[in-house]
Length: 575
Image (cartoon, rainbow, N blue to C red; front, top):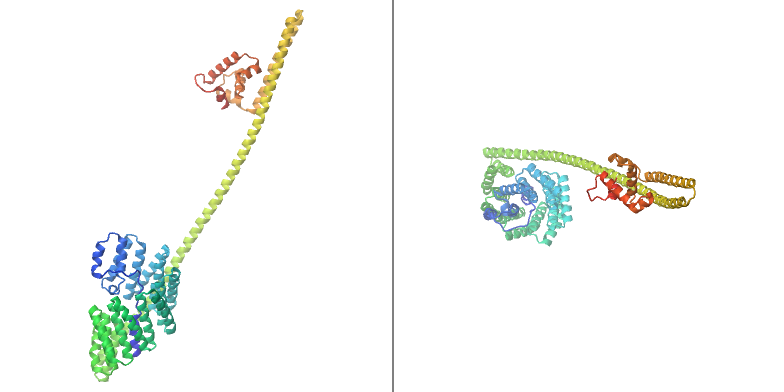
């Protein structure tokens, strides 16, 4: 019978959950009024989650509705952290209802959202929640993987509360694998950190887990020591449900040590608390414990009413383990009394409950396989989506890099081209400057030549006036005229050739726009294009200054700028 008692003990003490937030001071009867006074939706979500931290509120019949309410508010207001924490709380409640598929889906959604937001607290808790579901389904490879992931993340964050809890998770994993030495090692490490940070919730949890290990090792006195320590904390915290469980488990130890009267008193205390809380499962367990205690003490007649009461509550609430155990012992009792009718009745109940337990275990196996399939499929889809995303990102990055390289090449080519154009322009300007200087030198030379020829012409005129004979005068006049005409034609041809070399197309553009210009006007335009003064033009052409001014005036009229303030030289320089 001892192994059966130990199984019941473990089921009650290992069903723990990590709090999402720090404890607050809100009670269930004031939650709605508090929420009505809050305007910020985020505050409402946080207050509901804080309310659900309290042990007495976690088993409230409206607890899952409150958790759903927090999730809905967080989703409607896009409060991501609130959504993650709400999903983790909902995952806990669905786990308690044995809806492991829903519990896993919520935990995985919280995990993925935490990964997207790089929200490490949520991710660490999601790992722990996923590990707990796998542990419940006896998939210890996966549960240990996620528990260690949770531990590493909490260690990275330096979250000692989380570290303590993750160590306890790992201890639980080893416990269910019946590796009690490893389980005790991790639970003691967890307890040491819980004591260091003075976290009552974490401390009592590890006291309970260590007690469960010692119960399985049949060291009941040691187990009772740790249970009483956990009970003291629960009394200080006002956690009535946990008090009842602690007292009931102390009764297990007393009963297994043969202290039946002490055990009965403990079971009576536990039953009173369960009745006060109207916790049907706990009440059924207490009645079953009474029956087992009387049965173990050979007080068979006194045990029967308690077994029947446990059976009644078990049938009403579909507690198949309670039904199976109570029906089995009642069958044994009635068989020993040769009461075939009652024995048959209870063997049928025992078989029915056994079948239900078998079906439940089969369903658990199916759920485990289905979850593994769904999880692996989801992970495959997620990895495929991530690979696709990575490939798209690589293509985009490659495209951007290629674009930048091409732009760089285009820019370099443009810069080189611009530099080449600048150099060509500078070269052209340099050559133009040289030609301009040559043209200026040529003009100066022509002016000097003209001055010299003018001087010679003047001297010939003087010779003509002093000449004695008519023939001599005619000869001198002819020489003077030919000299002047020859000089003018030569000078004009040489100047025109030089000017065209420097300012190619100037005459063509002028004639295209102003076809009525004469040769003398074109020549005047060229002189002005070179920014020559009226005096320079006079010296070069042997014309009087008034004549040149008159010629400039006529030129302005032909160019259409006679009535404007436009500078003639500036106008010509733009052609």
